[in-house]
Amino acid sequence: MKNRLDKYFRAWYNFIYKEREEDYCFLGIFRITLGSFILVHFMFFMNDFYLLYAKGGIISYDIMISFSSSTGLNIPLLSDFIIKWTTVSEETSYNIISACYITLSICLICGLFTRISSLFLILLHIAIFNGSQLYSYGVDLFTSIALFYCFIFPTNAQFSLDKKIFRKKGTNPGPYRKILQIHLCIVYVSSGFVKILGQDWRTGEAVWQALHQIRHNITIPLNFV
Image (cartoon, rainbow, N blue to C red; front, side, top):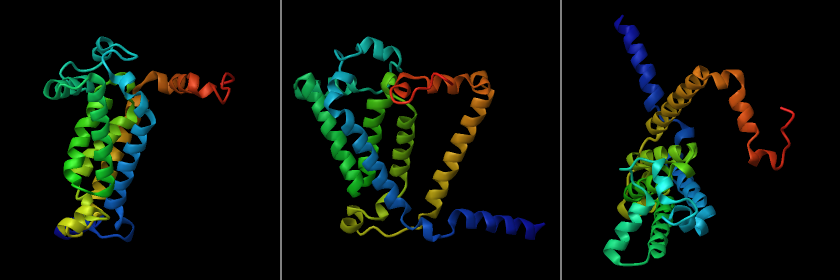
């Protein structure tokens, strides 16, 4: 019995902690890819940032807040805070928020003050995307999760300015990759169970509705489905 337990323990230990060649660049690539995605994603709508999230924007603040938590962090609250302490205009406060988001994304990509950049990016990302439910979708939630892992993982141990400036020591990236893989498995398995329990997914109606959204019919006619 003891030998069997030892065997299971060694197998589990090797699964989590064994150094693998394919894991070597994981931490650095994870940080750089995440930072690049966040930056590009934000740049696509940066010119319309004020129109989308301002109190007098395309969608009224009262309508926007009705779909979100009244105590949650959001961009109008950050804008009010900046205006209170700096006396700048509302539009300028949104430009300051945009500049901070872009600067923090670049710091994350370069691995400069990585943990601090990740922490403030989490707060800004939650305020911008998760704080405005009408503009939020699944990828924003996954981005928040990835930023959290970027904050707790030693992602500055590879390909970073932190490593050069502060002489950061290398580390085994294997356990961190396994944690992320296990998390993703739990997320998608639980999501699959939820879809199985939903009648719309079992009958195929949910897939039919997704395929018949306007943006899909622009290029590919799907009326035959």
